[in-house]
Length: 305
Image 1 (cartoon, helix red, strand yellow):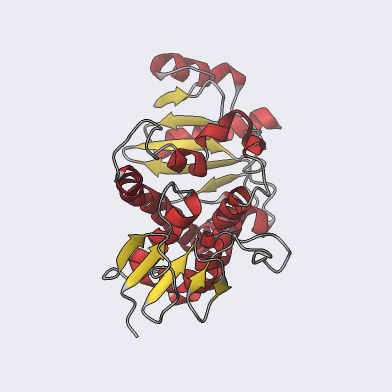
Image 2 (spheres, rainbow, N blue to C red):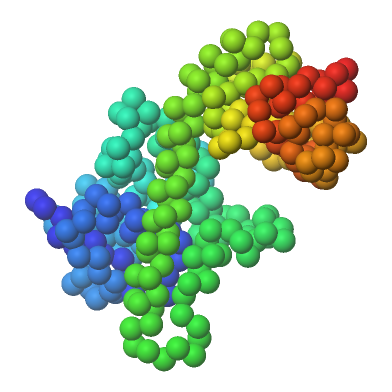
């Protein structure tokens, strides 16, 4: 039977049902997205998908709540929110609807679940404290989406629904951006692997454009690589390689004498004609030709050794 109604609860909203709505409205664009706690509305039926409300989890009946006791758990015992349940049941179809290549669907489904969905599940269930983000806790996606709720003294009877539907395209943009980036990461792997092979024993990796590369370096065990160069617009960039995604520390820094310099000052300090910029933190430099950026990279390598 055709899905004609997507039903979640009325009142205030959280990231889990908002993000669930992103997935479901992509898959069922003709269905009405309804916010209600009316018993008739949240009673399962073949033409409905009910989520984050209803007091039950039954995939076959198309009801996906997690507030009941006991709540649904992942295989490792961690709790699901409605988003995790919807992603488990509909995430693969969503990825296909987003034109992710069929051969990449499983990998992206799993990575998005681990890196994006799980955190939403844990926060919504109180299984992880927002304080783990430290000073950035107010900048997490759940906090930012929550900030879109109406203020306490907005007395409009439609304030919650209005805010929810205004927040939905914002939430959609974050989900779609994550999926695009995960798909691009997969597309980049063969390119990076070929560039590693071309570099051989050189500590300088040359890529045809800016792209994700660090995880592929790790998988290839290319620990000898210290710097990456690639074109960017009319210029070329030279980047250090971070030790991990959790730190700014690099395998090697650019020369201290270059830090914060631009144009003529940087040309004089580096001895390279065409050198244009070096960040004060020494993780990126820019030059106007491939020859100039390659010369800067070679100087940086000699400085390490």
